[in-house]
Length: 217
Image: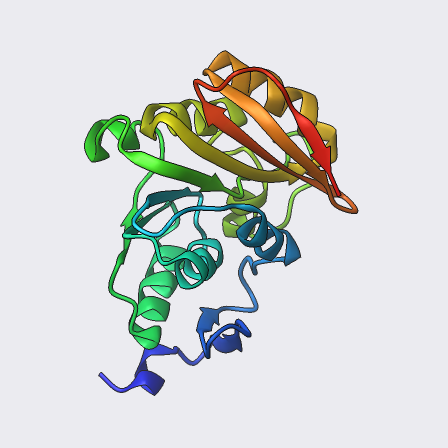
């Protein structure tokens, strides 16, 4: 298939500004933000690691991390079929062959994938509780609001997926920080590093880690 045929008429091709990587997006749907790029820069992994990205959307975080760190595999989990499809076409466009996309709910993904297999779990989840003002477009609501998945479910699944000592990385709104840290500890992911952005927060944790957290600039 020619590369041009991978981009549908209602979509656009955006430059990720890293080693000629491109990403397919639809301007009428949910678009990735600077938070996703910030998370891809904040999260770390080693060559040969296995990464799982939950709520992967268009796949920008996993794609950028894959290019920067050269992990062995990246596994992306996305509920919405149109986003998973766009991501798969982006991977084909870029010639990426070590990333797998799963179009399915993240709840109980570990049961299918395997427990304690991931070195790194990274996630940019829906930020908002369902009581907040919503868009007229349901697909955008699902991406932004806890309609199909909750914060507790995200962190619970990360705990199941991570190896002991594995790393967890999340971006979310600053006002959710207390909820995030309490839920991480509930599932034995010890918060380790916090970085405040203008309206959001980046947080890392270690599965089974010792207590002790630091705030970085």
